[in-house]
Length: 465
Image 1 (cartoon, one colour):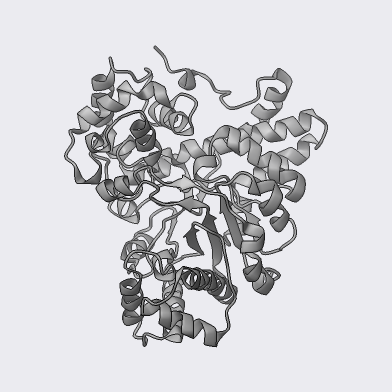
Image 2 (cartoon, rainbow, N blue to C red):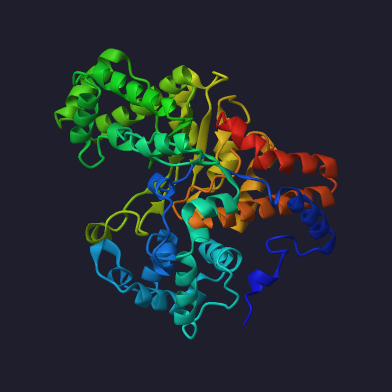
């Protein structure tokens, strides 16, 4: 049976005929524009080594926590999916996935995977238990071809810029090799220092000592700061334009040097209580902002996720297997110390991402609508689905317009899904703008200018590309 998604060129566009016609025209303007992906998690090694994915399970199931979490909720043991070092036959994992494919109807992951199957891999039948092996073999055969290597797909997808996420002590050798190889796109590292800033991170003291040692600094507060500054400079020399901070709570503090030195000493000695560790963590976010003001790197804050909610699952299967859960966030009071100090610096760019929908209209849009440094991060993680994107647009546009947004961010390590995610965002924006035109709220030419700007110029401005 042919895939509905494969047959419908108007997917995600409005049902009303007049509005749909406007949306079609808007979407057509940007459908084939290059992809700008300034924040994501695709390993640079995949690109540098131009790998081919091994099988459909490796490609679409095992590494996708959107998929594994819903399978687990439906009674599938994570061990049977090959997670946590457990042995599993990839074909059998694919059969399990096909048996449960109906569970993904209406989900963002189901939409993206169907798009990948039909638009990238050329699969025309809907996945089911009956055809699981046939589709597995068809995909496996294609994945072995040169035109399905990561490098070939990179060009086919029209990716102009892709940012990876990297540890501050990474040598960035693969990025250097790519830059010298003539690769026809920009692949940029991103400075992700969480495990060196958060006293509650596993092995924090060990990580910090490795950092200062690698930079030839003394293990003092100022040696620690100089080490972070040195590694940021190393990243900038390799093309990095941004730093990324994943925090459960977007709380910042501005502590004077003497108090910060004392906090540093107590944290390092394991004597700091939970509030002192919280203050240290928040103070270091403010220090990251100070460094961004000085070196020009864009600061992104991804807040509001309680990592590894299920301790038992985390201990058995490790991180990124589906047990991270959103929590409520407070950006207005949490970010105020940082913004009091640096929010009016016009060359400072701070992009705020949330998975708490309630903060868009109440907090993030008003902040982005006042502070020249604050930009509204695109819907992230649990909110990067079509209806959530529409709610995001409604919640933020009336307060801050379109110019204060980050542009779409795919934030993914699922390489094959990148074009599906960007295409979905373009369709959703075309639908939203078409409604504004149909309701007489903006003229057609303004909608055309906005959607043109949103896919290329806007992310390039925000991320200083």
